[in-house]
Length: 119
Length: 107
Image (cartoon, rainbow over all chains, first blue to last red; front, side, top):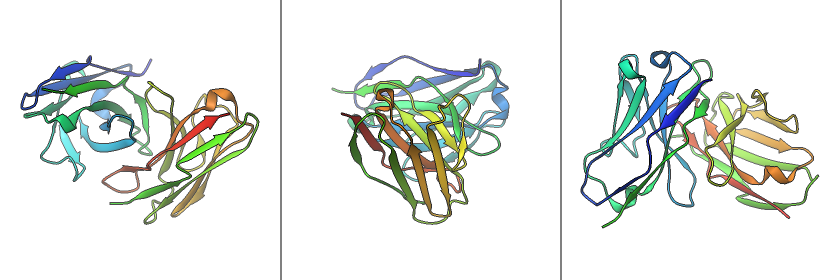
């Protein structure tokens, strides 16, 4: 079964750093782009960017460039989303999703990671 | 950046009704337009890829059409389980973008 499994919920304080993960299974992880999508509480989906784990090539949405960092460890089929200094406004659910190599649609999606930033 | 505008934002509908959701792009996305369904507390799920191609396992009551800048998701004979928020999504050019979502409430 093709699936993406994300790390568990996190509660952090403003200014702290954080890495959340997205582990792929059932497919050749290094051959697909992995996208990150943010969903603020009660709001819609926002595309953050994508990473190609095969060579760590990345594309960031202008809205998120410089705010987060994507990385990948192809030896363990895992992609990461990193913050160096969290803000309260980073409180959201973060999804990873596999981009189809033919048409660009996203499937499957991870189950989401809830990140709560509060003092 | 391509802006996707969906209409309506919200619709309250009865079972067996036919529903149409539209998605207008600020410039052509060349049919690289996809539709997702998100139910409360769940991840989004792909319904329609490339404007009109049904994704595997999706009920036949869901269909898509359109080209260029204007796209439509149609749900024929709505069922109670279709209560969800629906998003269009373009991968025609970077940065990829999503529409703001259309929430369907079942009366």
